[in-house]
Length: 102
Image 1 (cartoon, rainbow, N blue to C red):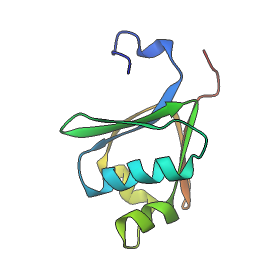
Image 2: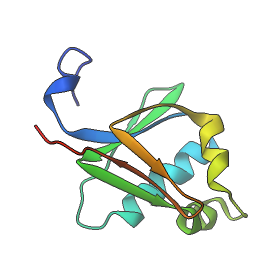
Image 3: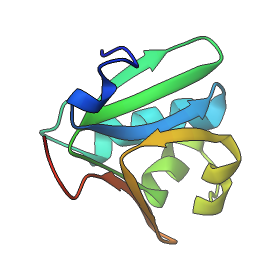
Image 4: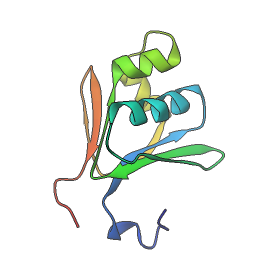
């Protein structure tokens, strides 16, 4: 993990979410929806930092399965404290990515 002083020196992307049921479901979904990619989850007590190199895709259906209930992507915005990289949201998935790489 990098400190804030060196954060600009890596290609990590992903959500930073308030701790809770949704954050844990998103962390699990990130691991499932990104096979072959190393997804790191850092528990910072009040929030979870979920990150991978270059790109993370999180699918609505996977989050629903982890929560055990219907889920709409706009619910993510309530607990999304911040994020690294650029973000692209649709009804079916959210994508965190970089256009340019270091």
